[in-house]
Image 1 (cartoon, one colour):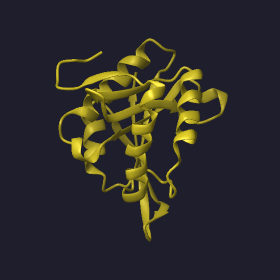
Image 2 (image 1 turned 120 degrees about the vertical axis):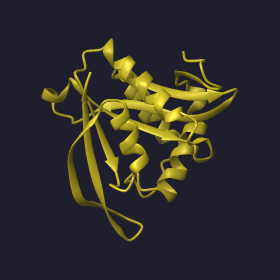
Image 3 (image 1 turned 180 degrees about the vertical axis):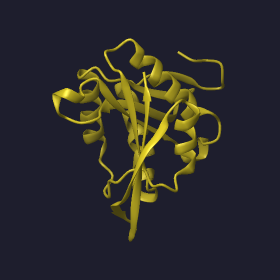
Length: 169
């Protein structure tokens, strides 16, 4: 648990899923970090959360009092067994809470969580090559850009790149 700032990083609880769903729904509806077009409902988000936890991946929230400010999790990079030691990270922060170090704290905690697990590499698949904040966050925490997939997503009547970044664990 991190209490050095005015928020706490902790494991996500079932009770957090309504707020996690709300944060993600805003990103799906207005942002290009997620390539989903329709925001999943609470039941789907709970199912995703339970599947990640059951598989041994980390799922964290940043909270101030009872408010979830952001969340982050690791997941399988690819489904084939040979990729089992590589994880993908995802970080989402409530729009009004951005710029307060929440994403950095969440990603640092995810990286630390992976050190006690059999993972060797972490991959960031960043939606939108114009997402300079996410690219800078990952670079700050030791990721290096390994490629850009040009115009692989289509959302909001725009073709969107994906930036691939990687760091050893």
